[in-house]
Length: 145
Image 1 (cartoon, helix red, strand yellow):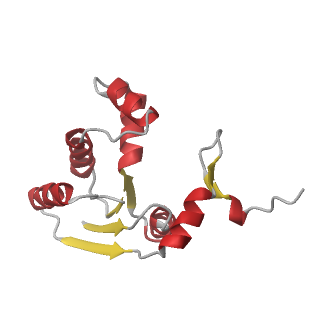
Image 2 (cartoon, rainbow, N blue to C red):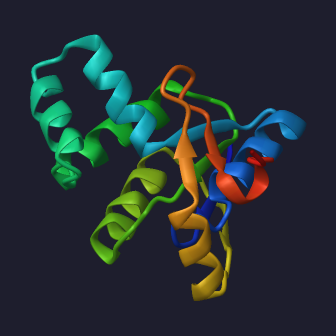
């Protein structure tokens, strides 16, 4: 089993690149945000806490995120992509521990660099469809009157 980690600031294209690799090479795309949303749907004991934190734009307790990620990696034998994880040194240390436990020793880290002004433009133009949840950027849409 191999893993790829995309590290970059918001709007740099981590999700876009992860999706492209997922489609082309059939990697399992693991996003911590998706793991948290799945937990809410399962209505687990942590679901309401997670839902409240996310609704308020707050970070979910790191231990919950790490436990969900560990369980997901234990359940798969597929090559995988971690989208935007780890986000700090503590998460990186714990991820290293998980990977050693699972005997995953082929890990590639891709750092996507993006100009700060470009990132600001992208984040200010970001929109999400309320129905399908797909993310768009108003700069890429034809919004002529």
